[in-house]
Length: 391
Image (cartoon, rainbow, N blue to C red; front, side, top):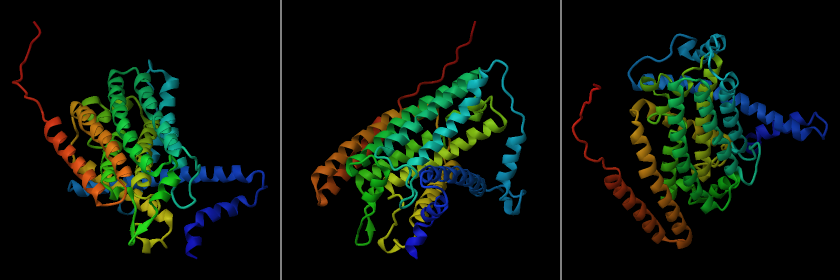
């Protein structure tokens, strides 16, 4: 019974495609999985927008959505209707084709990343050996869509916002990649399914998740920082700094095209949270061995929703960084720490079992954190402000 509940979606898929001829069953199975992904995550997006607005209202001591539907739960429906019916305005001098393709490319690229995420036992659309590489290849396409949006608008604010966004995303994508390499070094595989299986082991009832190791904890923190910057979430939401850039790279977008950018940002947050769950939090594995009877897909989505709650918490708590602070933080602190963590991971791998590697690896990371935090990120002397006037 428990095994059936764990594999209920897999069995349902096999039952549905069983009505078709054997030749069409593989294609039908893939199409059915694609439809489920396309429906599931936009529905999760609608739910998240309500939770975020309610949560931010609670954090900031104000009332969130409470007019549309019971307790405001139908607010996403109202927002969707407004986006569909709002006028689509395209600047006269804009490149209409590129202007249209930019949000479409963003959403398609993000959806492609879900194809390799194992959302439960035997629940992955494409189980490829280089799944992690495919995920990052699809994620790199989002920078292109952002630049397309800013350049095609023929607007200086949009172009400036796009350039800032691309600089930020490329800088933190390096950190995102390097923090993931540590997991590949330990697991010995680029397959996300095998990475989860490597963590689905228990000692005294406790899991072997990578976050419970010194290098894994450091890698997860660096990964979380880079993921927050990659998805343009607070405090790294400079590409859409309304107080400075009107609305960033999508200043000239309205109606459904703007809604696609909004959707793409949240879908990217879901996919990057799913990847972090897979790499460091054991994916669909249970947090304790005696909870293994709970369906695997429940654990995956529980961890995913917990990550989303942390994103919301950060947005309601932290102020936005300046552009120079953001770039300095990436290149002078986060990236050096990530590169050091790769060496610590290698040390962990070759020191063998024993308490010595716990002490050595933890000491190296702590000393580097203190040194770079106190010395490397120390602000220089700032002189008095001087004003110069045009003559």
